[in-house]
Image 1 (cartoon, each protein chain N blue to C red):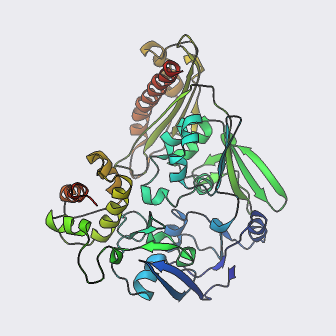
Image 2: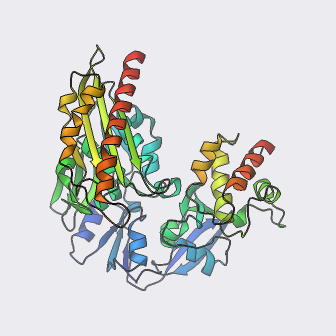
Image 3: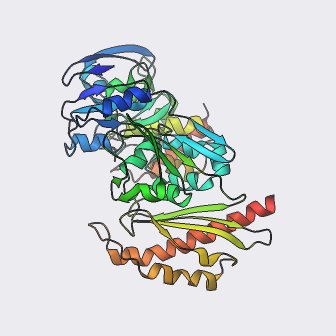
Length: 163
Length: 290
């Protein structure tokens, strides 16, 4: 496939179980496609340079920085964003509820990325793993409020509550 | 913070990719994008065209042949960390690359991108030099192989010619039972290394060192191989490691906004000893297990 500069292309991708499409320039990032074209503003952008991890989404189940991928690169792929964690009626998922119960958020800006990163971690470590492993998992997502301790407690609590 | 417009190509074969790169219009390769995309957003880099190699067939395999490892350029850094065969045959690769970025960036970052970008903190470059690996390249005029020990020329400088594509890394078989270790220091957890040390040590049946490699990052313009042949025949005790002081005395590491050259000169020998000692201990464990 080749596209001239400025020329738009149609991208098809599965987001939270639904096939979606958008017509974008190749320079459109995956994060901007989610936020601007699909109106899924739960994916938050902070540094936009891959440092802070606040835009983490799961691409075919693996965490990636949505700000460092071009939307065209997600053609045919499957995405999970924070909007996919709650039930259709808005009922929080167990992990989200654990964050609520254990004060795993203050301002909430990093929370979508923390939730998805924790979701991936708990899939690989259903028993939660060690605190060290939880810290390693969330080390790529910056939080400026909590000091992380309540986030770790939330993930631990979700693991103990079971799937 | 949005990249300037670019022509976008998504070839499906190496031949198609190198043909696009060979047109000489300043096209850049897009692999994992973990370094290139931030530079494009800052518009430090404004390529007229991108050749996205993520859909190129045949570059994402890790294959073992007679103990040697052939690693495709599109192998994600985390896939290399997770590969059990690679961890067995060349433990230094996992030891080094697990320090690269974070899980989410290792899920996208590639072996080829790490080699081509040649960041001075790139752990994989130190491992490639320590393991005497060969970088495989392709251009419209054909394939070319360059030993890692001459591929890296300086910060972000390599033997890569305009229009050439990194297609893989070939890592020769290691002495059986060799141990490996990698240590680095950074200002924040998982941030860019200020100094790093990669070591491999193989031991003889009596438990003495029979081969060793030591490569340091950020003490010289490119990954710096230290002559540790003096360790052969020893058990890496304090007296033997003391000889390292002479080998490291001539280092004149660069300083930058984050850390001074003097600090690097002080830290490098500490990490060097730590990596060599750990590698030696692990080689001993292999010997006992065998």
